[in-house]
Amino acid sequence: MAGWLKRRYGLTLDAATQVLPVNGSREALFALTQVVIDPTRAQPTVISPNPFYQVYEGAALLAGAEPYYVPSDPARNFASDWDSVPEDVWARTQLLFVCSPGNPTGAVMPLDEWRRLFELSERHGFVIASDECYSEIYFRDEPPLGSLEAAAQLGRGDFRNLVAFTSLSKRSNVPGMRSGFVAGDADILKQFLLYRTYHGSAMGLAVQAASMAAWNDEAHVVANRALYREKFAQVTPLLAQVLDVSLPDAGFYLWAGVRGTCGGSETEFSRQLLAQYNVTVLPGSYLARDAAGGNPGTGRVRMALVADTAECLEAAQRIVQFVQSQPH
Image 1: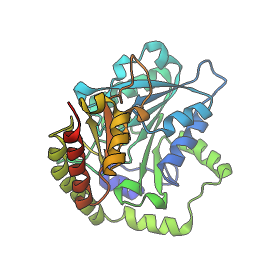
Image 2 (image 1 turned 30 degrees about the vertical axis):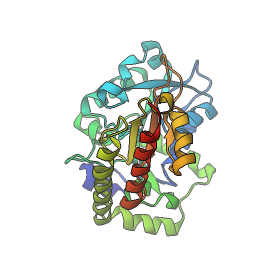
Image 3 (image 1 turned 90 degrees about the horizontal axis):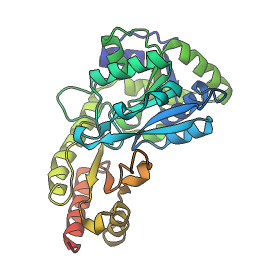
Image 4 (image 1 turned 60 degrees about the horizontal axis):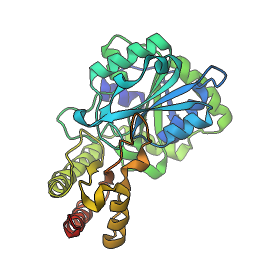
């Protein structure tokens, strides 16, 4: 895992103190939250992007913290609007979840955004948990910038108050294996390792061996990325005829606007599409919460292009037929 960080990001981390295997990023995101949050402090707060991966919310609530949801900005490819967070919220924040490339929007954070978050972390002392499990599925010529990579470029080589999460689930198409790792601030990982010792989350030897093989091989990752690029290149223009959709920066989701179909209701769109054409999409409002004046998932659906190209094309064709059959 430390070797992969060196090859991928040009970083040298101490495998004994700055890297820790985990049983998938979901387990680690939840468990680290329990380590970081001190519920005895006044108004413990966890900041989350909105929409978001649902474990962020559950982890915050079960740790005794209050989630604060940061809306996405459609004008910036649905990147999180960090500037909308009031100073008093930053002041009581203990943990910030960042997802880049984002789920479900596919937005990738640039270096200037990382600089802003690192400065806020320094000022207020909160930990940044950077969820990067989609980092190897991208559509630009250059791979997405990682949080540890950004920290090193900005002179923060100790990775203070920063923990990055990554996984083989998307990179190697093995979600059932439950294998990933966390890396970053050695002091935080020391506390996390102690917690996990009692939590009983050691990785089995068979999974360790399979994980070593996967992290040490890039050929299958390149092939996997090429398959996703082919699917998106064929499916996106087809769906763009009837939905508000564009190629994301990275990830394997399309974050599509349903326009006026089904009255613009993403839930009704999803129900009728499943009932009439046997195609499953996820209502965007299910991935977000009402905050800052509305639910940023309203009028949108998440489409996962994880099936093979032929199946994705067939599903896209059914969606086109469904939309064209609706009264306008």
